[in-house]
Image (cartoon, rainbow, N blue to C red):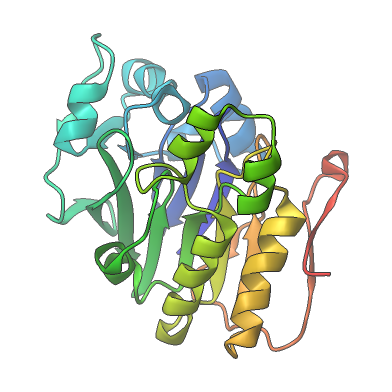
Amino acid sequence: MRLSVLSSGSSGNATFIECGQSGLLVDAGLSRKRLEKLLARVGKTVGDVDAVLLTHGHSDHTCGALALSRDCNVQIFAAPGVREGLKPGPLAVTSIEAEEPFEVGKMAVTFFEVPHDSPTYGVRITGDGRNVALATDLGEAGSGVVGWMRGAEAAVLEANHDPEWLAGGPYSAQLKRRISSPNGHLSNRQASEVATSLAPHGLKDLVLAHLSKTNNSPARACGTVHGALREAGYGGVRVRAAIANHPTPWIEVGAPAEAAEYTYRYARGDAGRLFGIE
């Protein structure tokens, strides 16, 4: 079982996960053409996508779903509140109740609710004895959310903003309150708390997602979260930042944690920047 976060951020979100011959996208928030290019970067095609899981109804998570369903006969799954929040149109969506597992090929999938300003869900996926959990676009991660993510060997978790950068940044006071509210977005500090809660239960890879271009940076997010993990005695957990339009390298779920420090570079030279622990 392995995954690549194809793109993450307000401009579009999609993560490809495969187990054996089965593949799925968690969210499809980019055009079909863009998704095809990003999949090609990790050696895959739209034909490798058996299903799309929609975590909520905002366009940066859904805008490519119609084309995949209509043109490629890809199944679309969403929890009820997400389905009702989509724009009216010909998109066929299979409604799945939260906390009720269903199967996509060789993978078992469960939606679990997370707090946001519209019906939004995390996803837990099991395949080949491995567990992955994804939770982005959430304002806080209480015991219920952490419980659903516990035991995941790889996780994709929001780290949207640095609180100080947000407070001193250019956004309006109203938008700042929305982002930092319990129905807004997770900060680096909150992501650190989740990470240190998951680490004792087998976490080996953590991808920080949905980083704000204005109120965060990959180095800031990774440094904050990995620093907290290191202080808690879990410095071997690999921490990466996902960014827009640059797929992460394949993450092999369950690969042994590393004891040494390491650096992390995107495969394509045009990404240009080094993301890792300094």
